[in-house]
Image (cartoon, rainbow, N blue to C red; front, side):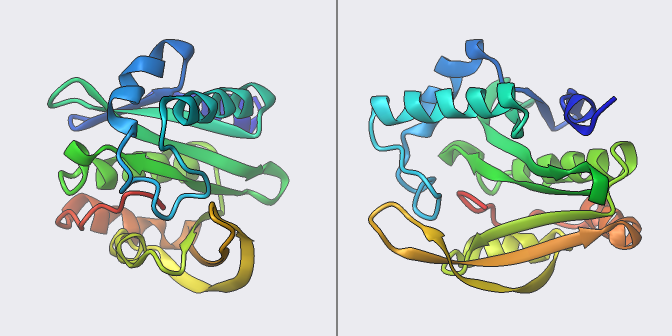
Length: 203
């Protein structure tokens, strides 16, 4: 099986459930998406209902085309849709992928959802897919996301200047982080034992 097929699994523990996004998730996510804090550092903006539906359609299109595996994140304590995260840039031949496109609704930030979801994604990437390198990137201005990535054990590698356009025309400097296969046992122990960092709206 290809990485795209293997990655599209249901991942869960006692705190969160992640499963591939589907059309029937549209309204549940809509209920938490119209929060401007989520999109402050995101590469797209969701300010209106029309923006949201275009954003959701693009996620489904990426998933159908194999460009990303997009997950719905469910908070198991409430049973509510909390947000979304993705596997992307899947370079199977090089055993490398990215975890990103991450966002959580206001009610689910700082509650342990981000940390548990990132743990499940990292574990699946390394232990099931066999990834040698898992990447993350975020806006150099997003101090909360940068702190959160350091707190889950990701190593800051450097900044790619003028990486991409942001809504409004600003050019974003992107900071890259990674977790390597050799580092996973320590990162896994840290994620299982550590306290929850402040969740960022997006990373």
